[in-house]
Length: 219
Image (cartoon, rainbow, N blue to C red; front, side, top):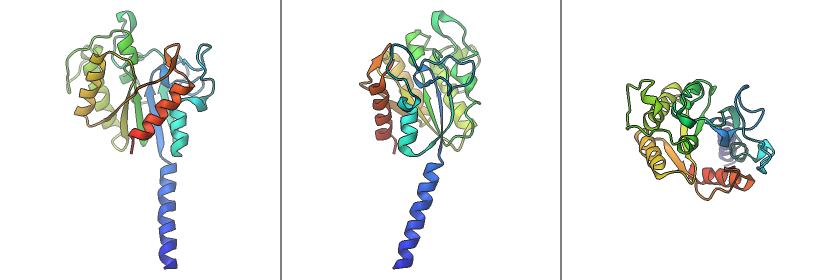
């Protein structure tokens, strides 16, 4: 009996140790930024004078990582960026769109893709659903660019689990596009709701709500 008990403890200890070493990478926009935690030259939103999030420990991704006992691998988030290659004022943003940053996520076990907000706010073109043979012109539109992004992530990081996060209060056309493309790639889409925001971005309360919704949604 004592031997069985010790063996059980060893198994649980091994599981706990494995969980604690899981590495998380984030591919995002301003909602996931924090000064000093994103690549040099990127535009961070946080901290901001008109938002009460002042410490990295108040961000949704750090709250989640700490709650799970994981570690941050890479946070490749850039304020104002779109998933597709068409940004605000219909400008070409291929230098910063999500697909251009796919190879900069390190060696993660978990990848959070938190985008689509700027595509919605910039009224980027939606395009048609397309699941292969993308060209640069195809990826000027949201639907083909999202499919290309998720397909590339799954092939580039075959051992990682990819989760897509959908902001609250976006146009239904964007929401439905995210649902359709994520379903095609069997990627769990976490649709946020009731996120408190200041200056258009999650407040401390909003960040905590995002973390709580992730914890609830992800088994």
